[in-house]
Amino acid sequence: MIIWMVEKLFHSAAPKILKILEEPPEKTLFLLVTEDPEQIISTIRSRCLMVRIPPDKHIVKTEIEDRENQHLQTFTDWMRNCWQAKVPELISFSAEITKSGREKQKAFLHYGLHILELCPAVAYKQDGRFRDDPEEAAFLEKFAPIINSAGLASDPRMLRST
Image (cartoon, rainbow, N blue to C red):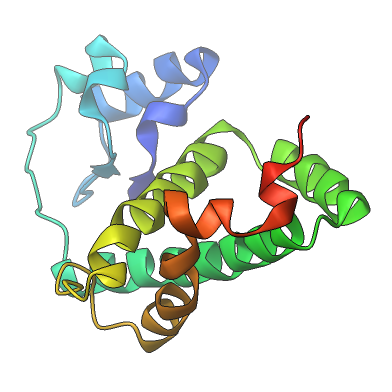
């Protein structure tokens, strides 16, 4: 029997799981899978043999790339709307990002900071720091030259007082 994300069990389920772990049916093997063993109820955790399995780097890398590609598109749209001062679209973006949840918001903002950190390197042709993503590279080639004090000051919209 496989119990996935055992740390998410309701406390009311713990006694039932505990009983079956203590007196399992013959030829039964329980696999309790978790990402955070410290969150498993201690009475259940104490009856288990913990085996750590390192993540498959290929799978993790693919998931990260998928997320970053999604973040790139969202960030690109956001920056275009900011650049073009499309207030209704920016309000809509704010409403959507608010619904996405704290962790997704943090991941998106971290990605945005990553892009902003790469801009000076790309602008000064020292862009070996970013991965081989042609979409990200194409965006950075266009975006990096305007993300500096001279580029922002050359656009009259950036000089308007708020």
